[in-house]
Image (cartoon, rainbow, N blue to C red; front, side, top):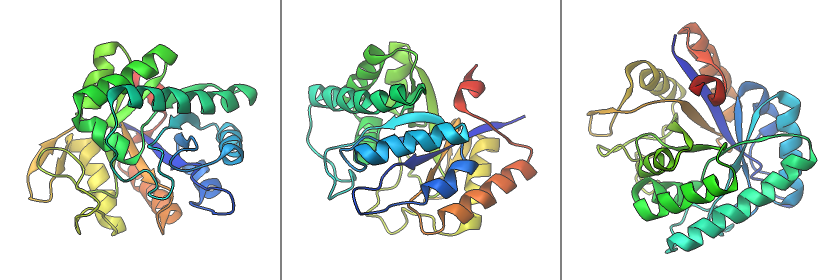
Length: 256
């Protein structure tokens, strides 16, 4: 039987600005990636997000990004490997403090946005991120773009890695996500997005924007909680996955 983890980027509200339908989404996901205050989120939102994850039995992950709240961490920055290492360490530590205070366990780390995409292609950044996670806690699981440099770096250093795929994003022939500046980057049609997820899980591949079949492994599928119809989409996705007899469960159980 095929299995899949459903993860969602959470805790991205900031001060008076509310982003995402977190409380409505928690019952339908198995893993939450909680923003750590640099690209989004703030201390109060971080604590509330941890509490909600524990309430719904959802695995807790740190979601560290570039220090760019105005750009939501989606704009590339020219950072060194050392800076990436320190950014990851700083943000994991911040979230881990809230997790410990609330009696939970930090489960994984998934870089956010531009940092995620940069590490998918840059060996030096990927190695720095993997090393920062490993030295913080070698039991942490690293989420990265399926088949990317980040996955390779995590494997090399000895971390458990999770190949992540996306429901609402298109792929190029190189297996990378299509740039958000491309008109074809986002999949807004629910049926198309659901079909893509099922295809990736069952066929171990994705169809690129050029119509080519690109091999990949799908351990976890990302749901973007700030999408306009995120709640309706995750409900439909979960229903269709169950109809296909695809088991939904956290990554730790998948990898064990």
